[in-house]
Structure formats: structure tokens, C-alpha cells
Length: 139
Image 1 (cartoon, rainbow, N blue to C red):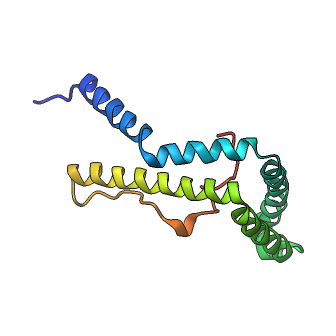
Image 2: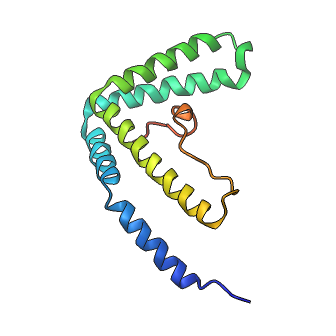
């Protein structure tokens, strides 16, 4: 029986990670992440967004039956648009999306090299702003 050599696999994974870390996508992501962290206006907007998001999540627990659900949802959607319109935050989110697309493509190639029928979670821009996007520049 042929056993996998985990040491070789780990070395290959680290090599792949190094290539990704040196990619234009990663450099753009890190540049804009740092820009957002240094931008006082962006930090104020993010802090405000986190409060708006908390109110929405509280209302969302009860769904449309919460008395302020629709108001909280509209406020959050409006604030998300404002965040995306801010120069450094918008660029950061776009760079994050580019990096996510690259990582999804790498996962797809790796998985389909093993099996064409394997299911692979792919980059899905329609999910942006849900679980993926917390707009927390600290992670």
C-alpha cells in the first residue's frame, strides 16, 4: 500500500503558500488592509458599522417579526453602501475579493486534480457582506 509522505506534502503546501503570499493579489490586499488600519475616517466608519450590524443581527434573530427588522435591515444595507464608497475601505474590499478569487481558483485546481467530481467551495460574490465580510480590519 502506498502511503502519503506528509513531510513532502507539507513542504509542497508551504511552497504554494509562499507563492500566494508573493502574489499581486496578496500585496494589494495587505496594502489596502494597512491603509484602512491607518485611516482614521475609515476606522470611525467601521466602528459605526459594527454598531449598525449588531442592531441588525439582534433584529434578525426574530426575523420579520421584530418590530425594527426592516428599519435595521435598510440601515445596514445603506451603511454597507457607504463603506464600499469610502476610498480605502472600497479598495480593501475589492482587494479582499481578488485574493478570495485566487484562493478559490487554487482550491478548485487542487481538488479537481484529485477528482473531477469533488465538490469545492468557490468564490461567490453574491455572499459578500454576509458571513465573509465583517469589515474588521484586525483579522
